[in-house]
Image (cartoon, rainbow, N blue to C red; front, top):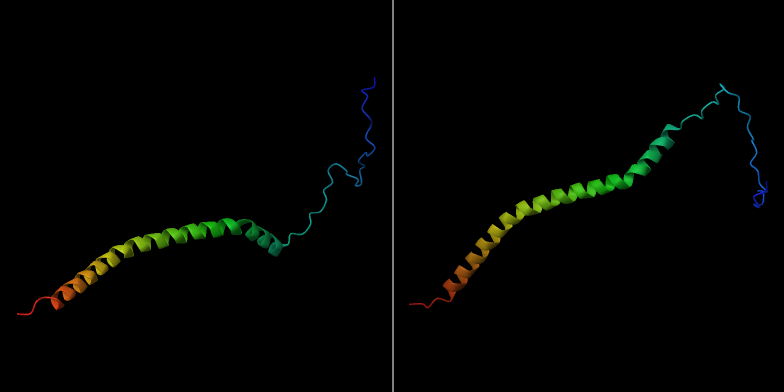
Length: 92
């Protein structure tokens, strides 16, 4: 029974003999290489989280500071206007 498909010219071959129950020794783990790999993997996410956390902290500090700045600016403008009006007041 022929399906009409051509046979593959490349057939994979087994290059290593495997005996059931026999284990191959694991390659020694390079701890520093593993640390470097993990850090490379998580670094972009850590930087993103750090930026978001810092931005939230800066935004909160700006919000709190803006209330005081607004009050100080209002007082300074009020003082400047009062001085300007006093210097232009008619003299008796």
